[in-house]
Length: 138
Image (cartoon, rainbow, N blue to C red; front, side, top):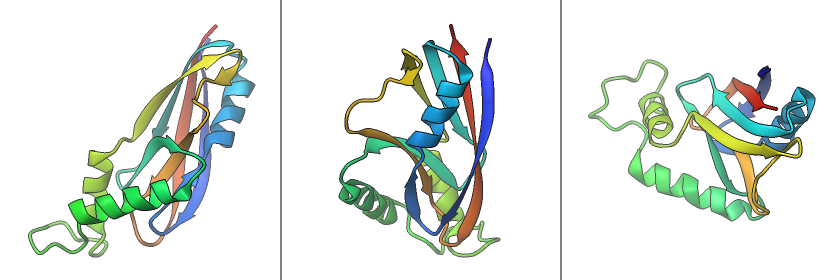
């Protein structure tokens, strides 16, 4: 029987927040021993990623790369309803991912030693984000 829960997070500015523990708790509460956990963020200007969980410089460097690829306030952008970071945030979300799937074994996320699940905010202000965790399996 699938199990689904929605997690709520507040995040301020362009940053990444480690949500691994919250997702792991949702998996444990599901009772699923072997299956899949799908994690989905319900927004168009942030994303999810699995990346290095030990050295924050990795996430800093990823932000640097996206800043170069998708600059704020490009005069070619037409969509700027909520400011110069608006269209850039949508493009960043499209280039990254709004959903990830992680295997579950022994009732736990089967992430590698140095992997963590992060909510990556692409807007510059404070935002409240909803993340849906759906766990399927036996």
